[in-house]
Image (tube, rainbow, N blue to C red; front, top):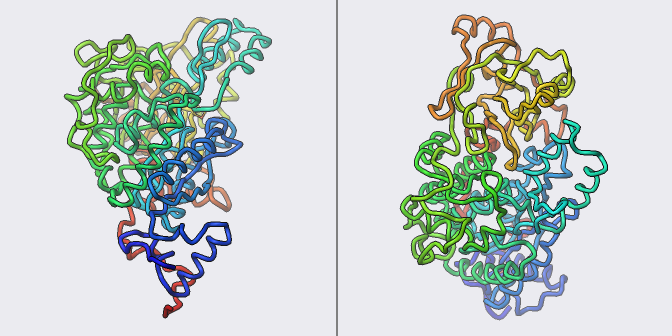
Length: 583
Ligand code: FES
């Protein structure tokens, strides 16, 4: 080897030495066809690709990775693409949330185990983006994200659809008998016209926006549609920037600060983003060593109005947000609420990268003329959720945000499925539907079951929304007055497990209150006679998950994964590192 990699580069540990380990590492790469020039000290950029044929939203990532590779080469780096587990919302059972932490471990350990000086993280479908951020935050090697962009909008019978938001509507129409099964089949064929993630501000688009709000991607990257050539152009720029970040040693720990999380939460609220992002942001923050609490979401929500008219809270799709200026324009609209001195992966501050103005459109407004007022999201607490729960007010029926009604309790999902259709179910429009044993440990994996179906007899009577409470999550595209993420969950001994049919429940979302009108003595009596219901899987990953998953109010990470490993000395020695001497 003519020149060792600069010692400041991590890859020098693999390729820089004139010794046995250096020989073994270089010859292994040369066996793959890399010439000696590849090891002349240029930064090695890992391209962490969540492409998978079973994740339709991420099916175009090979093309994106090729563009990233072009950018890395143009900037003088060595691109090395690697796979990880990928998580597809539509096919993966029982729920992708069960595997988010597994993917985060895969990403972190792949970054730590291989000779990367920087990584480009290519994610898209809901959990892939937070998993990559969690892993990268813990590894703390320079990292930049490239999300995959939204799918082309579907059109059905002349109506432009959002995949999730409209699907729920049509499901209810089929149940109510107002849509035929033949039409439902036609909808199935039309619902997904291209690769890319869901086209409304569901969880995937929310997380993509959050990546930009956190400063973890280049300005303007989040909202470019998946099939627009500008996404490939952006991929190339991201690849080049990764090489520069390796030289600058600009690490996630310098970007993922408390200020960056405030910015991301403000952005999430301003676009009416998915409640799932609350759980993911809490987890990412704790990986980054940032003390982010659930209450911070309520505080920021109280001052942040909805300034983007995008589904599900508004009318447009993310593609229209892109054409109206994208996330940079939204951030410009939010400028007075942002920490503009936060540093991003560009190496500049948020303020330095803001556009000069918000372009005129009917999609992105200003703080002075928002589409909805503040408090699109509320955090509620009380004797039913001592550690908090979340209500997405922007997706709820305003009149139900303050409500008092008797509980109708379902023990678990099987109980709900068995009874919600029952014409004899003792339920009225004022009832509060309670579903338990669907949290992180209980389900396990905290699936998106929090939008409980309206009991069929009420649906047929014209009831479209009710107060629903669970320890589950809800799809980012769903509607309804749903109290989600109740913490602690029933399976962890939370008071949700103590509710009985007929108990009066009081919700005052804007005041942050969720109570059951049952006195403390009675609750204590019930607690003594109630065993939390949860079945621990006998073996494997699911057993580890149940043993180690934390509650929703701290992000559902594993207890042993919180924090980061930012001390290079803590990186493990390799099998050949025991060899001494050089030549
Ligand atoms: Fe993949 Fe919606 S199903 S983003």
